[in-house]
Image (cartoon, rainbow, N blue to C red; front, side):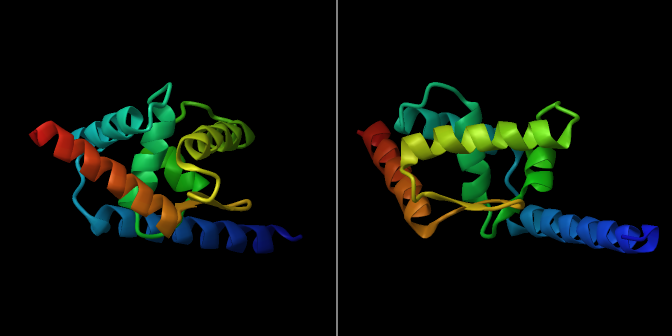
Length: 137
């Protein structure tokens, strides 16, 4: 592969990530506090052992489209510089999230990222609605 071809591939990838970030940010004005509270609610509703898998679910829940590893790293900074290591971290978080929601709740887009399936989205919405209803009693 020539340097020019590699450069064009990288430019295309950067453009895709910028478009994806713009879509995610424009989808809704979810502030950090609302996002964090949703992650806590998800963690409690599904009795998850940690907050990071719940943050992944909350991030996927807020996005109407699949999210790439690069955007996940932007939205949920892993503080791991190596590309392979942060992908492994997100793979691990997705495994914990699937353990809580079910195997069909999160779809892996091999080599690219994740998305919450309609079944996963419905499950999260039902649990959050049940939690909200019990708080109002």
